[in-house]
Image 1 (cartoon, helix red, strand yellow):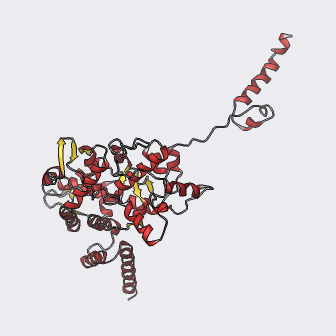
Image 2 (tube, helix red, strand yellow; image 1 turned 30 degrees about the vertical axis):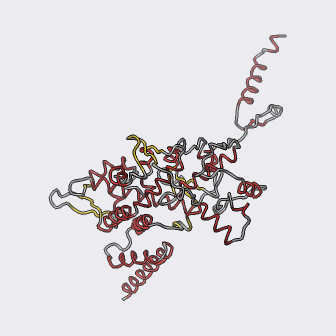
Image 3 (tube, one colour; image 1 turned 45 degrees about the vertical axis):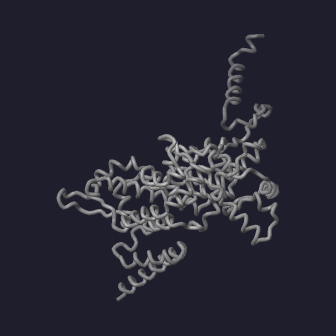
Length: 425
């Protein structure tokens, strides 16, 4: 009997069945596997998957790519400026391109932006060198001058940041990482802080402290919007007292029940950013998260361009009592914040502050940086035409950036028509 069961024919059939059960090919759902239960795996729902599946804002993503090119150009400017004669050979710059974060050939990148970089033949060494154009040099000097003129506003920003913190202190390293976002000069530690001993002082080499609290500054930027909504739109106080401006990206899918949840969240009371909750601690998770949303909103409102890299934002988690997963919290509120993965890092942007890729309420430092970005956007157009460049600069001061881009397109069209007429003659 055993010889029949374990005969060569039955053993061959058994091996075939085992291969069918174990295989994942054509016979996976054959007659021999129809009774086998297959375990259903729940889709992974994490901050990473939600980040990949979020509704993208293509205007803001495009802006981040342009700003990344501007940051690369400014990084190369720093390297060139450190040289003795303020120029560097292309061979030397090619060795530094990986330190800057450039993933293309240095020559190709420099030739893309002739309004910023000037490539020429060095008369003595007979090699190709690069220096910064006068237009870019003037804009960098203008930015430094504007920052010096607005020192009072910068000190107020620092005081508001210190008032947001739990103990009135900030780490100097974290402050150094976001100096450009806050509009601080590179030498703010030696040039600016000693001028205001009644407002700020260095408690230690690594800690900046607030001398005294100013209650007049303890008003969040969001309160201006709430007051405007309450007075101009005649909305009820319960609908505006704790509400945030919501601006979903194009293509955002609103699921069933989402509007009701959002309406309830907008009415949910919370401890505002400049209010201390030591006497009345909050234990409700939703109210704690809403307080953190308010702190993040105020922090982004204090920056020059209303954006900050997510990695640098994490340096303020403990000092601002934001002990949560910041990326998860930001993804929960796509109408308030937007995380762009374009560029060199993930960047958090305040959605209400931008319209059509431009800042709604520009400031002097942003205006200068926008002029630098216009040199990036110009590319190889209008090279060697100083009158056209002066015309664009004048138009920028008088009109919005959207109107400026429209004027640039009209000038390009006129130039094309003139070239066609010349060819036909």
